[in-house]
Amino acid sequence: MNHVISMSPFEWLDLLLHFAVLSLLSFGGTITTAPDMHRYLVDEKNWLTDFSFSSSIALAQSAPGPNVLFVALMGWNIGINAGGGMEAGIGAWLLGFLGILVTMTGIMLPSSFLTYSATKWAHQNSSLLSVRSFKSGLSPIVIGLLISTGWLLTAAHNIMASDWKLWLLTAVSIGLLLKTRIHILWLIAGGGIIGTTGIL
Image (tube, rainbow, N blue to C red):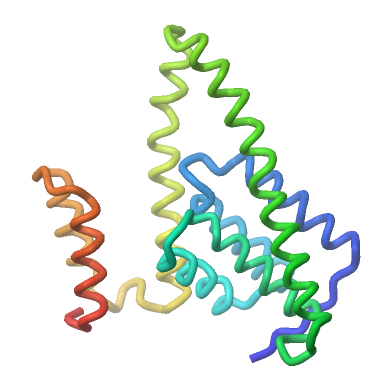
């Protein structure tokens, strides 16, 4: 289903700058900024639909490679939409690649530069109380952002309160993670097997 949009050069620049700001806020990985991406791309700008937004994340998370790939898929979808849809031909494809370039440049460059500079400084000053406090303070922020992202993705599919089996599976997984020495990758694999077999 097409979601045709029109984008001016200033809107492409706005997209680049918005992702550059999100890049500096992506503590715990790019996925933690998904709620604001949703607010900006779906609710405010209407460049993506709810379905294409959540599908971009789901597809990128299921594929091997870094989780930042969902940003490239969002950029691709924005460009394709700006070009008139997939059937519009080579022009839409070129705008799709422009969308990838804009979103990936915005999300990667600022955080890469900041990470390099901050890591170098933190290694030189690792004994300072302020450095240790900053590292400790980031943990609850990252956990909160990840919970927010999970909540947003489940709300998009209207399964928030209706599927008690998923809530039970989540509670059991958290309990196993906290009370046993089972590695989290085994829990993820178990969840994947349960999901593909349709048990829940």
